[in-house]
Length: 85
Image (cartoon, rainbow, N blue to C red; front, side, top):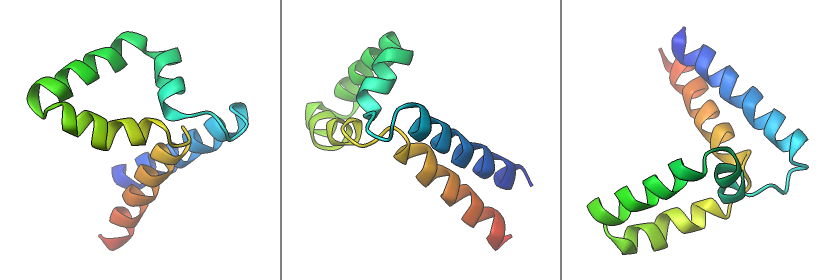
């Protein structure tokens, strides 16, 4: 039940972000607008523990994706997980 509820919540969050941002809002811009210090701290942590290659090769491309995509994918994964139980 919690996985299904979280999945539905994340899909709704994705829809709201897509609607409010016009669908073209990028994840990096969304995060820097909502939590600028959190994004910088995440970059510091990733480069310190995983290396600059991980930040540049994995996280930077993710920050260029639409902001609604991350909660949508996570929400669908939680819904899939809930359906398998």
